[in-house]
Image (cartoon, rainbow, N blue to C red; front, side, top):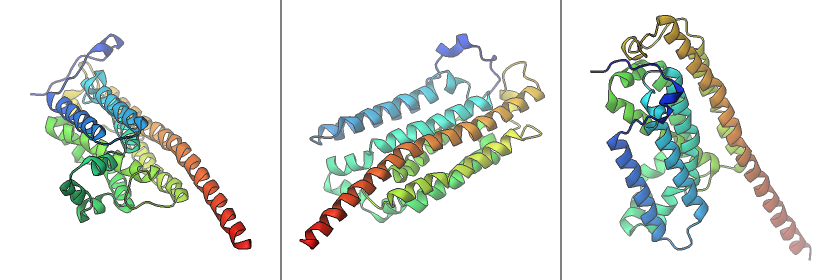
Length: 278
């Protein structure tokens, strides 16, 4: 039966919340990526590094003290949420795992990656829609309360953050094969998602009452209704300010890539016009 835990103190920062199922999935992901890299000559080391960093961030967000207190403090959950969807997700997108699977896999696996289902899931509009829906639904509906009460829903939420973050930033970075959008539109793509985090964060930061009844039993021992509400409001502020800041930070490499693309395009166009003039 779920029960409250003692309030967090910084001496608890060394505590772990090891979940065998989650660790097994991370080990499996690392093994599959290493296998694909072994079968793919000249695979960029930078992409392998991004994948390793993504796993490290995922481990810290779910298995460290952050994971231990993520159902006791709403603010802690928001830190975890941002780490998974806006740090680990982009790192996995930079690692281009689908490209690695396509290059290292069998004919059957390549056919599966070229299937209508995978093509649909990786469509830019689908990635945006998933982000647009998943964030408010997972925080402003009864689903969040159910996550607090049921560990299996909690673990699926973690996976959802990673998948949605990967699919979203996969489009934003435009590195993998498949349908892409104009480099300039990638900035619009990212900026258009900022209001989702802003709206959800502000709705929680301005709450006048605790919207999640499960905190009556899961909040740290000694918590009062006022302290629980204050922590929900803090979590909303973290999502609003932290989410917007991370989105703007992600725009920097996207803008740089756009400038480089335009520069190459200009050089190619000038060379073509010179050739036609001659």
